[in-house]
Image (cartoon, each protein chain N blue to C red):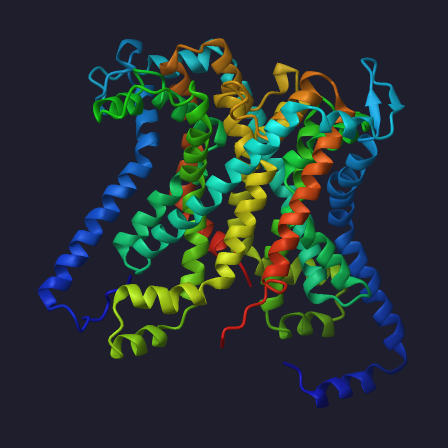
Length: 314
Length: 282
């Protein structure tokens, strides 16, 4: 840290050249940020805005645009498949987020101690996250092939009935959720490990002197002090679930939205409308609704937690 | 829970027992987690007739599946495409992000905080949500079905900028001072002071960027219809629609695609996991 004396000395020393040096720093700053700022603007900011613009247009087969006002939104309102997609998306998120939280935290607690054994275990739990979602989807699809896949035979042997993991509309979405959990839990384990690291050891030691058992320590120390991490995990996993960050690839490969639209999350339906039927305007309208939903989700989170701030002393 | 110190409730031998059980449970869960990947590799080495047998170790291991995938399908071409795209994106992204991170952390200029916040707020925007308008823009720029179209939009993401900025904030102030006294400009400071100091975080980010691009599917799927431009992920996804019953070929192809990423992971697990761990908060 520079002391005040040093700073004032430098200021006096710089004298007349100070103004131009300041401006040079400004220009340098802008130029250094320019490539990334421009790129993010063109490939992220503009698309966000364009989504709203496109949603009031209709695109014909020759790529011509015609203004249709709110017709795309009206169509959405009357489209049962849109509502189905919204329901499936909500279901997916509601199942995925708590499962991920429990699995991520559970694994983190399991391998929390730092030793060689746990280092290996951590890597093993994290390894699925390194594989591409296309491969993940293929491998799982292979394992749950009706009757002869290795997991299908296992469930049959355990007398859980001969149901079809991907062919039965009641199970397909659950299968997709479980595959997503398998892929993501190692990542959230790492995030939770980071959070656990920041909890001071003394708290546990003091609690142990007071005779608190493992469950009491978890309930009264770990969970409350893990609040910021929990907030991050729930928000990021919720946003990813609603946006279909992982779901799209898995569903595209495994079910394409079927059977009977049981796994047709909004993002899959949007993609089909845009790139299957060329309904770019309609797809953009649905995407803007999705963006609004995402903003609501994050808004509610920030409101609930007073801007993501937590009071440790409470 | 940690049982580093002997707990008041248990005797020494009980603690060892609990610890032992704990390790067994952990190991079983870890094996179950890894099982699908082991299964994939196993099937890749099995002849077609053995695809659905339940033994993990192939009875008659064969390389035929790999040979078929590498010769019968333009799989090498897909891999070269994937490699070219991922490597280019990684290098350019590291270059741009270190520049932006340096400016946002160590240079003072008006609007810096707003700029950082707006970059940071794009953190939660994921590709599927903007795929339709992004496609329209990239098409209008004439980048459909081209390497440029595969590469350029993939460069920009807030994650890298954010991590680098945090890293540069943590460097001591004195490091630029000496260079500045020598009369070095900002570019010189960036190039010969900041960049060399960033080596550790840059290697971690390089691996993460490379993996993310090697594994990406949605964007290549959307903008390349020309099979000559296909990346590996598109290759295997398409493979599935052509040979839907030939699981031995598909698992061999999946293994070829997954193995480079897993090898990278085994070598760099420390850096990868550490940099992701710190991405949580702070």
